[in-house]
Length: 195
Image (cartoon, rainbow, N blue to C red):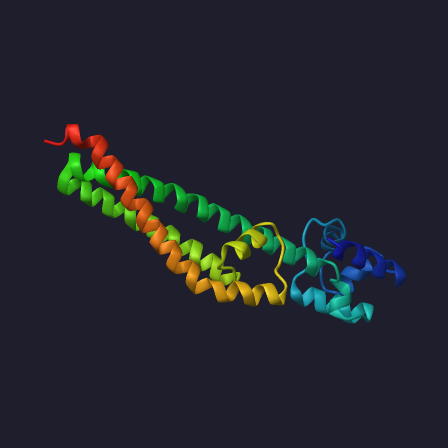
């Protein structure tokens, strides 16, 4: 982070020791040392005191750190979307493949198990949708750009926003067709075992 360098630079410019700076911002010398060595980060009160003492804006003091913080937030959002997406995909596949065997072999209890699987799948589908909505990505192109850490320009954003309703309808129809095909194949394969 840049803040550690900034604190050290401005402290040296004012010819202050760590102890003298610590007295002025009401912390210990060890705290100043930790800030300058990136071991921890000052709280907002200390940041305000430092910017006032150094006679610079808060923005100047933490310049560079904001970009790093935004990047860290973006990385965590991408990781969260990928994590939820992987879990959802796995659960969706298990749910699709298990519906017929559960119904055929376990009857009523199989449907209960299927209902629980379906509930978990929908929970993670909701999590994925929430993450997409929080980051304003809906279409495939937007999701891919987001996952790669890129942003679409305004024109591309408007074009993609226009596609959203159509893609959702196609997604529902495609999912239904695939589920129907998988269920029919499973029924055909399990037909000899059905009593």
